[in-house]
Image (cartoon, rainbow, N blue to C red; front, side, top):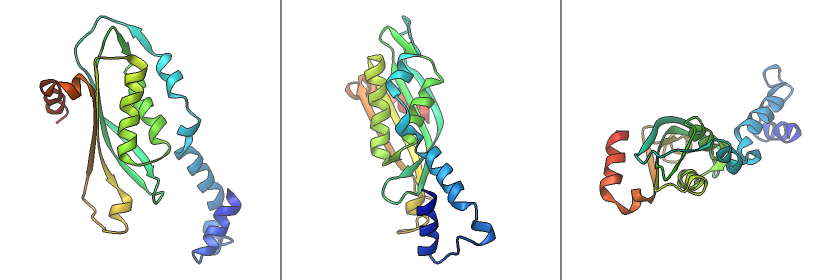
Length: 179
């Protein structure tokens, strides 16, 4: 990868032998490896290791979870907040695993729509709850820095499954609690 980064620097008109760029190929390789480490993570194993039997049947929400990902179209960052809820059906998951599930999918080249659905379906498949809801609010640097150059536009996506999709009251309760 370092060789490719050096070639990229040459293609954009830079000198990869310039003092400030000598370590850039190595830094970019490490950065990209970290930012795409989700491809090497197994979300199923992550969930299995943290599921507990519990009779709780009320909505569980973890909100304002920071997310950072790379747009698959331009490989530029998008970042924001994720809000996740589920209604247990005899099983709960360790709360810290919800942000970790998000990281598995966010640390891949992504579109926000797919990311939102992947998080929801991973929880649905792993817990079999009565419902799952995921809302992501994000700013996309591919829109802010280039193209339309709209610095303050936020993209909001949602995925509602089970009781959140079928019951407007449950969906409304979730939406009011996250805002």
